[in-house]
Image (cartoon, rainbow, N blue to C red):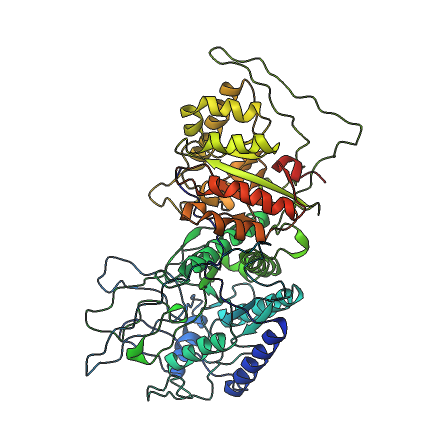
Length: 634
């Protein structure tokens, strides 16, 4: 089947220091930051692309005052305008990109990043990739600061100037506290209203230094990247609020860099954080646009000009021609709504907007590291509340419905009470069970080919294990005998759409599904499975193709009758051609109570090969195997 472009583990298994080591490196990084940080705020910088450098601070402020007095909207900072004549239009973002310096001599291009290393071989005890005492370190790059205001606009209600730098600093300080409470190490590139390199040091040693009115932007950004590197951070999160001259633009997006040794993990986080933002906005009733989680190639450098940055600098690899040393960890630039948009603006400056954005960052970071606090599910704006659990004396009789003409009836599996709806009108996203029981749900997606479904079913039957299967309508039509067997064997079935197209466009940008399209994708699969099985009703359980779900599609799924969207706590990565040993180590060695494991039946067969060893590993660790329905019982 077409694979789920889903979050996956850090295959490089980069070593992390012990908790004590984390404290030492964070303290050293904090001291280094303090020595570079000024105590006074300065006027604003406006960033420009191309050959423009920095606007005079006095001129910028004078223009700002004039526009405000005229009642106009001001959006200061890099606005992403212009494509430099390339085929790839730039994003509407505001993380800095540095124009090239004139080059007098040819400079060798940067060396290619090292190839990813293979994951460590699994041990007999299937140890997790990261030691239990290794607290991950997150570097929060707090956008702008001091002379650099970021995006700016006047609050029409109060006349106050609202500045991006203030909003993201407040978010970052709140997020820092939440992450530390969960046991993470956290380092911030600024904790107050000042540039990190406020002393105007020549941080990258290229002989270029700035002044108070014209700070050298590359020195500032090198200082931020160096701080994250020196802290030994495992993830870089560059926090921003967007803005544009086109006031109709709204929404949220994230950018990551392809073709680095950790690009898969950067992509994974970018997709996670946009998903969490979308969930939060939907739960809060704020309708806005999902703008994507995309590779951040802004434009193609001029041939022979190795001094041009073609990525946001905080995400860039080394650029020797500019004496720039790139970040050494996965990361993403995140733009959470548009300050310039009249619909996004009141939400982003409200307490509810602040809470929604910070909670989304927190949930994405927690899920990225696979460290869900207390073994529970991280949900944004919604909580799965299972219905009443049958008592010990209660029995539920399997139902056999009358088959429609042309089909044969099957013994439908036992159905348990479904989680209660939360009244939000939006499907609830479930990543993990919350009962605390030592249970695991094995789930298999079936999309484009028959694959190894029979072998998987044989293995589950041999071991007496019930699993959960996500069926597309197209697969069910092509394999009705297997659909009947899945139901007859007592497994759970859930709706995986008809054609496996992305519901947000994140993984199928060429397909722009309407709300009606999404509902029909679900309804047609529901009808097909009911016809084949003689009445199995997959409602209310749904799994989105690729895991793509946004605020609008979450409401469409709910409207189609599916108020529980089944995601996962561990993606086996079989679709990436991981070996059976790698899959067993990752999903077996990092399991937590209530875990939901995503696997596929597809023709590559790696999940099927890993299944016996994965079951053995989890069983040896005391886990029982249940369906998703059973997992969600209280």
